Image 1 (tube, rainbow, N blue to C red):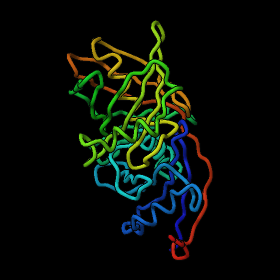
Image 2: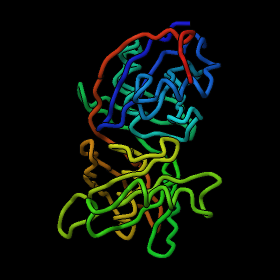
Image 3: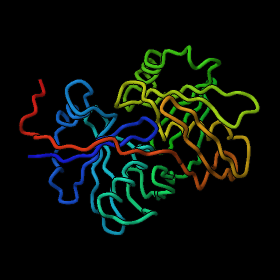
Image 4: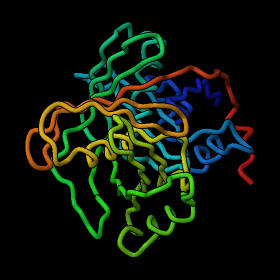
Length: 267
């Protein structure tokens, strides 16, 4: 079987995306997805997404981590697949689609800028100075003094595979803030990728919410990642209640191609 794909990236978070509206890719094995996402032997990506039809929605987003398993919500992935959907013939600027964590909206604001509405958040847990919350994917936020001195892979992996999180895993975010600035710096260790990624949309959202969880009203924060800047907009209603959360940033088409899945060597 020939897989026709396109490669997209949102602030450095890169994805293989394929059109599965004919359901021909329903049975992709984990090993095949792993191979396709492998940066040395395959195409190379942080994850793979399928565009699917869903009654009552413009489309359904099916997301797989680089380890081949179906993943939780991917914010940058949601922004990328919206632009892919438009190029695939769904001629809209504003999409209503279904992901693993429920319905989402995506708005194509310009040729290379896409905003994604995230799920509402009503719980932030604090434990020994760290913060835990779910923005479509589970995240832990740890504030640090100098983010460039952090060994993200070593420290992130230690937390992700600790007894508290080993079973389900968790995404680990290191955040540096500077007084008086309307921005923060973020580095993320992602479960499923099991490495640092250049950007993480749900992680950027989680970090922004934690930074302002004591302030009510409309907030707008720039999150600086290694892959570029993300803008987080939201309304803080009351203690730990966040509504109308939008993740906004750049999306770019990288390249397209085709690969014969029957010829793949997984060894």
